Length: 343
Image (cartoon, rainbow, N blue to C red; front, side):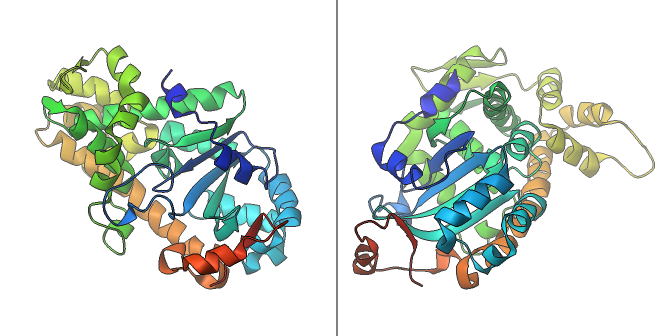
């Protein structure tokens, strides 16, 4: 199963995890602090570690975490765990981030998301936010036996492959495929226009081809719609209207609905299947799919970034803060595992 390629038993990550409440259905860490990236984020040793904690009961989890790690939260902590959970679930992309935390000598940020909301995002791409993170290599450090969650994680990877196929030509390289996949959750993301490195996707993929291959290799081998020449690193897919219609019909529900909204002419009142049939015969099918992705990602990224203004201490984004190494070192005090880094 593709998810096995993600698993990690890294002691560093597990030590950090020990500072948080244990009731997690899934915990993973991602980003340039875990997998080497090219470009400005290449300093892996000093890069921030980005964690995501998936919890069945966010109110109970935040209640325990507020007792253990009160200083991690912004001013919103005074509102209590129920309000924090309401903000987490109902605004942005369903995830609540605490950033700029010094923990066991490493600077981290961590997001908390409800298991149910994550499963919905993995299956339907309602926000393509945490689901998008999980389409790229991550280190899974804890996962329970939730069969529904495991199936949703696998479904998300298969959906990423199918969506990328629709935007690629008949023949392409592994690198071409992985660049498309890594870019899915950045389609329409306003941060790629304001603030982010424009070569971010390439910087993620190029040093990590082997990790992408581990993640997607078995899916590609088992997919009946692709000829996967793994030794040559080449792939060929069916670009006939019939082949594209089959792929469109397996896309996540939110993406299908966005494509339908884009292509359905006023007054025609066609159902989604009819619209997808039309798109399958359209020479610009890939461009339509990309527009559908943007319609999901753009509002989601704006809402989540706006929420970050309130969940980050003093409204400061982690991207805007530079902390010197000696300042970080001074935070490592015996007996204090995690603390808010000074701004």
